[in-house]
Every structure is written in structure tokens, then in C-alpha cells.
Image (cartoon, rainbow, N blue to C red; front, side):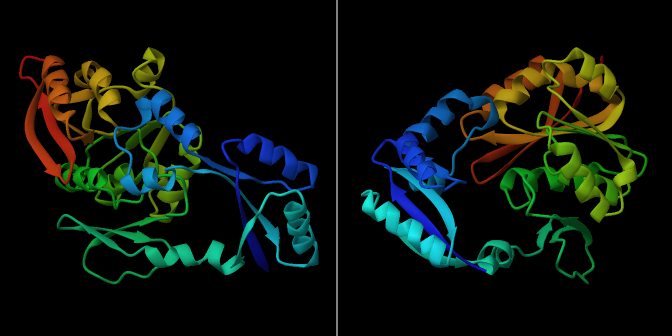
Length: 307
């Protein structure tokens, strides 16, 4: 089936445009508004440290409403009604194939370190590396971001058979899954997003390691009860989050680690690495390695000898 993508300039009043469209019987709107975008950035800093320039540019001066109609007589009739009301819709034809399949063309296997390769689930891989199958259509990261690459290279080094792994802010589960396919486990994972467990289980099942996972939903920093559930004695603790979460998390990390355990944290943007390093050291962690890729930083730490 073919569709019509409709874009309407909202002139700073997207809610009013949506109300008008609802009156015509339309539904399923996407609002792109610069003011809302900046409001989100100002009020949700705990979830990000960096905003991609292309994303920011796409919202520059934006105040528009998008919707999709079937490319048929009924859809064209609604567009005519919009024009009569002075909404001036911009129309672009799209197809089901455009929505459902074309995005897959952008994904290719990603080689990480010396042994790992991240492979989209629909592609075949017959190389010598250890594949981690992932569904990029799900909500979280796919391994292509520098912060994930930094963590995965550390996972490749420290995820040895018999090593218990804890993945904090697990997202898609890519770090814990990589550890499991390399022979480590069991893997405990946690994320604040309620969708994470289903996504992690789905990706783990693609790799045949779903039985290795225990997954929790909650805020590890805020919830002592959750920390009790997670337990202690992990040989590898992973946190690919942001500096504003890693800094308050740091004091709890030594208690999570085994005596010879390793803590790997990333997601730290340029300008936040010194604050993060200071928090890790103050928490009783020894920074063994500070790695960087592009503007992103990763710390590999161990417990101080007297802990």
C-alpha cells in the first residue's frame, strides 16, 4: 500500500493544528517543534550528555505537524479539506517498503576489537569473528556508537568463562550479550526503562544466551532494595550511561565488585572526564586505563587493595 506523508507548518502552534486535523478525522500525529525540543533537553539532562549536531539542526526553527494518509481517494479528499482551511500541507508519497525495509540497508556488520562482530539479525555472517546478533529495529543502541565500541573492546578483554557480569543501564543488552557469547556469565542486567527486559530477552534469544540473563527494572542509584537484589561479587561491572549517572553511581560500585573485579564505564563526553575520574577515585576505585574515541571517554577501574 502507498501512503501520503503530510507536513504542515504549525507557525509555533502545533497543538492548534492537531486540533484542526482531529476535527477532520485525522489521527496519529508527529509534532516537531524547536521549543519542545529545547525544553526536553533542559529538563532531562540525566539521560544525555551530548546531542548530535544533525539532530539539533533538524529542529532548528521547526514547528510542524506530520501525519500519514492512505494514497487513495479518501486521503486526497482530506488533503483538499486541509487546503480549504488554509493549512497548506506539503505532500510526499511513500510506500510500505520505504517504512518497513529500506532502513535495513543502512546496517552492516560492525567489527569490534579483535574477536567480536555485531551482525543485524537478518544478515548472514560466515567470518572468523564471534558474532553478536542484534535487532536494530528495537529501541536501544546497536554497537555503532563510540561509547559502545569502547565498552565492547573491554568486554572482549575481561569477559572470560566463569566471570559473573553486571550490566547497568543495559539498554538493548548488547554488552551483556557480548559477554555471554564470549563464555562469561551468568549476566545480571538493569535499566530504568520498563521496555528493556523484553528487548534484552529478545536479543539474548537471537544469540542463544537468554538462559544466562536475570534482568531488573529500576534506578540502581536511588534504590537500595534494587542494589540488594543485584548482589555482589561481580567479576565485571559495565555502565555505558552518562557522566551525570556514573558520578552518583561510583560510591556503590566497590560493593558490587569481586576483589579482583573490573568496572568499565563509558558514555562520558568531552569536558566531563575529569569530574568522572575524580568521582571514581573518591569512591575507592583505581583507574587502570583511560581510553578515548572521538569525543567520548571510557574508564577501566579496579578496587583499591584495602577494600
